[in-house]
Image (cartoon, rainbow, N blue to C red; front, side):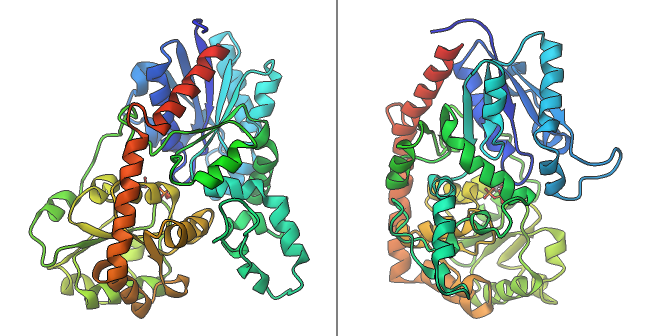
Length: 451
Ligand code: UDP
């Protein structure tokens, strides 16, 4: 086992909920690797949010800002600008950090999106490259089948898109998933466009990583994970939110959501609604959701940004104030762990999905993009812990049906049993002898041995 100080370059992807779980992993590794120092490369805005007023891992993590790809003084408009500046923006910041440290980085830990981690590691004499996929095994496995799925689509005689219904029975663990539910980038018309290009490069380069770290757990996606393990070394260390060793960011409940859930509510189970860090449903769907909530009269807590609130039906807030609360941001982990919550209306982002599983809450899913459709399919058909909203978009009737299934039906009881069982397996995985704890320890060994 090595004992010299090792400098690890951590390359974060700044958008949606990518950088926060990576920083959590860094903090957990820092506690297990006393001789490691971490340099965290990310854009300025995301670094400010993550590090503002905090000193993670007692000063062993230092944040470096990478260039946004924008003209000086102008605000970042699209994620594409940032992607188009890659990998040069990271290379510049890394070179500056190395000059400041007087030594080269001895390891690269990157968000999987940052496909060039292996090239940076190779340029430094083949130091380890660890890739961190912030979502589930199902979606990263899907990406590794990009060429195969595209060849299936190309071979589909029906050009009007019906072939998208075709289930991917030949891919291990994906028999319930249709081609149309694969992450959108896999089916992109132009694989050279910035975002699909980044994702395609990831699929091509990832098998050469020394290891892939997943925020999932073995019993959640066993077939898919075993298939992944046949291609590269996988450490399945989640749910990180349940890992006792993962430092938890401070809870802020500026809108008093938890006291509201604690107060006596008119019915037993409350509905929590949130669509992650970046999504606000289209105006017509906000209206459909609101009408369903008002008709159902179940207590609800809705995390909705002000630009979404303005599309609520006139008088809705006043008419529902006895049983509903709308906030611009909720402490989701604490909300989902509250016993009063009976259903989670979600976009099925991976963090949200795993948080619902970790706290045993059934989901009503309205996926938008990325991995959300495949996550939804697993929720509805593989794990059977929730339902997809009828037609894939919120209408009053479709949302009412979904609420009735989850809150008030025999099917809902079965879904609840299933999610509680998965929660139990998640808790087992993070116990001292659990599969995720063991995988984390093996990751630490791999890093220690390479110093
Ligand atoms: N979240 C939260 N409060 C909110 C909305 C979201 O704390 O009001 C958190 C949630 O707990 C999760 C993250 O934001 O950890 C959303 O991550 P996810 O992967 O589900 O979606 P993304 O933001 O990547 O679309």
